[in-house]
Length: 312
Image (cartoon, rainbow, N blue to C red; front, side, top):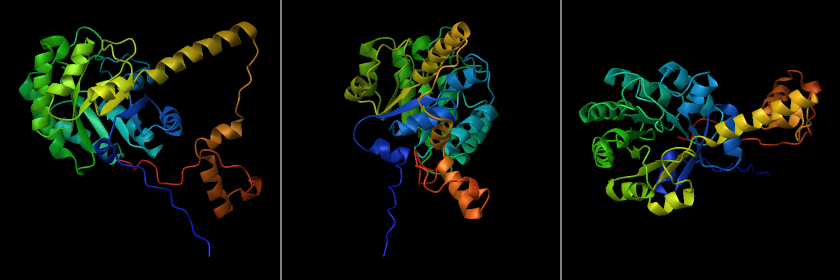
């Protein structure tokens, strides 16, 4: 009698955060990046709003709609088996709009969203010229988001950009007040010194998120340091975006000058296998849809045997 080994179910984001140490959600802006992050062994992935904006030809100035952001989050969530944290900007309106935003993201299998207190249209948290709404308005929106979710597994992250506008004390007060009305995680954006980064998890009465942005305002770039300071979740939003731009510039410059298409390490078939080709070929064989063209002994690379997009 043969037995089938069932791989362990991926942990939900809430389960990961309840464990020891820091959860690092490396960022992507599409399904390709999300798969690379999962295959690299990260426990969670982050949909960067800046990267999503850039991928659609815009700077991170709050120019995308809720529909564009939620649809991209859904594509990424269904493409991986690890939890997806997603940027939801300011929630795209008042409490009614935020209610819909939460439900749209949650229905697409997203594990968590962060909502911020900037005036819309917002700006990247590491740029000048930000404005924030009154504290009471921010808290009302966080309360609406908490009440709108249908499952306790879906996490609400309260992000405040008040440090740049009103100072660190106000940012920490907003973070604590957001936790008091039901937010699961506090996100104080764009702290400006190492001392400020260390201070936040000491003064905030709950789980804290650190946004690690190379070239940004916050000077801490080491996830081990963030863990030692007491942070529970770290986002790394710029790594793949910068790597893609730099590698793309280099490859295109080389092709333009040499006129020779460079060789690649992986074949076309091997690349497709990293994105589920073997799973789809099994369906071909099962339903005889072109089965004669598929060899059953082809090596299986990067196959996922658990349902995708359900690890909230």
